Length: 599
Image (cartoon, rainbow, N blue to C red; front, side, top):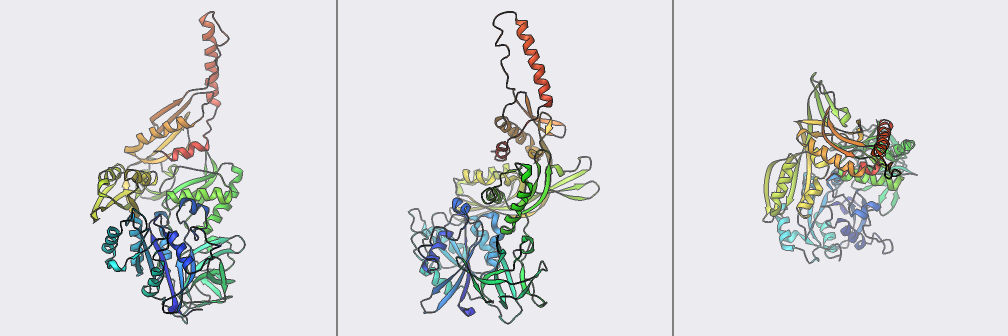
């Protein structure tokens, strides 16, 4: 094993689509970690979904060896991080396992909100920041302007900013030597009690849960009895090793090393990301600070299309949870959809990805209900109840008031879009708290907004009004009192609980109208009239009607007395009325999904 002073642990911080995965590919090529035969684009992104969307969903780790100009060989541990706001918890743990960070900024787009929030995370952990300007080979690159932005943000000199291109490989050698020169070697005592941070875990169907660890202090040997401090569980280290493109088994790992541990655990809940591993019987090792359980922000029901698939869906969700510690679920039932699960997600992208992974990896076709956030209801008796679904809202006679979660959001954009962005935020019940010009053509707007308002279409609309220039990042702050009502959607007088939602009283009518209109387009016509209504309590606030499919019963009456035709039409009318009483309206899955994408 290499001495600690020859090890460098670092991560890459960048906004989504700033070329992080491409640059990682060049680093792997330059250090010959990957042979030309194994090389493919986005080498560290091993999910098809990541390649298609061009984003990193799971953080990855890989070890490289670099021959420095001084003739010495150094070991680099690159801990890759996701760039999207929904995965910021993954980023925070990856950062905790490093001593340095490469700050990657796209020369054609400049600094964006996500980069800034992740940069602050890195600075809080005292990481050494190496600024890199990527995509300098593009015609639209604004090298001088963006360099000035980085200098303003970090307080460094323009000479410290490395110009690079992930596509052509320009600047890769400078980046590697800067990592050796600027990033400090890990500190730690190999003789101290074992302290290892779990920064990620993956599930292997044959080996169980594989935990990725960074050893802060002490030494871990194969076969050691280890204890997980936060969960209190004890296991044997069946296999330990380092992470290259594939796992390479070793007999021991020392302070400063990044690697993996396999203990044969088959249940994901027993390994929590952010937990600390120490030796069994050693009470002197402390847990590494900063461990927290992930708090989901958005809740939605996931139901199998066929109720017989309920157990399969449970298995699939449990396996997904092994790979994604931030997914939380519990069983629930719905009158319209049968048995399913109430799931907690980090955000809308997370929900979309989980749904897509269920389909691809486990062949599970599911129906997802209207996503909503969690509220707190205060009863007149003084009791406080958490509410995750509209049906949990207590009776209005007992309810005192409801509180909803608020976030503080940073939006960075060009000045010409300020007016439209402000209108959008005010329409979403936002309150502006700050406006700062980062540079002449970059302005940062800070808003306090209800989380429920950004769950649906906020991000898409922000991107379209700013022509893709605005970037958005948010942090939850607190719960505030709000005038919320439960909006029910009824089909022929029967409530469809999967479509009911909690909305602000001012918005209830327009939201109800939109859903009714959308359902009128989506529901197939039946032999009877369907009334689609939106209601608050007993008050109907919107209605659409789908007319019945009718057979032309008067076709055989050519000529003759009008009363014959009337008699036939009346008979048909009675039949339709009777049919309506016994006929039930089936809501196709496509309708559920389309209603979720309300404009």
